[in-house]
Image 1 (spheres, rainbow, N blue to C red):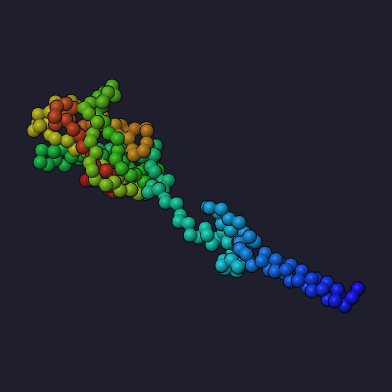
Image 2 (cartoon, one colour; image 1 turned 180 degrees about the vertical axis):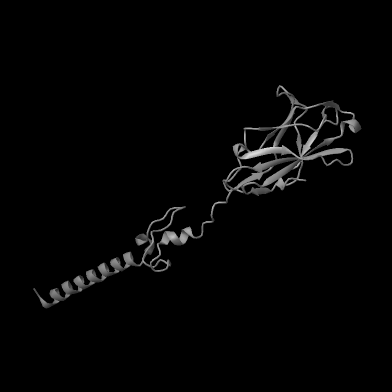
Length: 215
């Protein structure tokens, strides 16, 4: 082989090496995301050693600390049950043609419990038949009343004096009282005479429970 032929062959090999290097450089200088963690909408990339969580604290503990606690029920699971209560009707406090009676519930149990809202009430005759329409509730905002053993709460019951309003009347045998959110009622003997049961002025109105006996 001549010296000229050897030089030509070396030049060809050198050109081939340069072309291959250029091809490899082109592959490495393109979009680097080909080697990045693949993510989809609504997902997160896998975590790496550069996490911002404090040393010794799991990453999920940091994220959980940002989650608000679930709201607590106003009654906190301590609602008074019918079996824990006694019922009574306080003294009439009349005024402006109205008859106003406190309906009182007393905690007879050994635990603290709560009442929230209105009692269910109905005047009934000796056979248990309801007299008059269902009571109307006021628009007052109820409060949660906490009753320690022996403590009481009262809800106001009022109606127009039948002698003034001219409503039809009946004399109940009892007032049936159902504590808030309970199904079993308590029965209180009614000793306060006639109540309105028919006519335009026969409505009985209730206000929600407040602490005390209403006396």
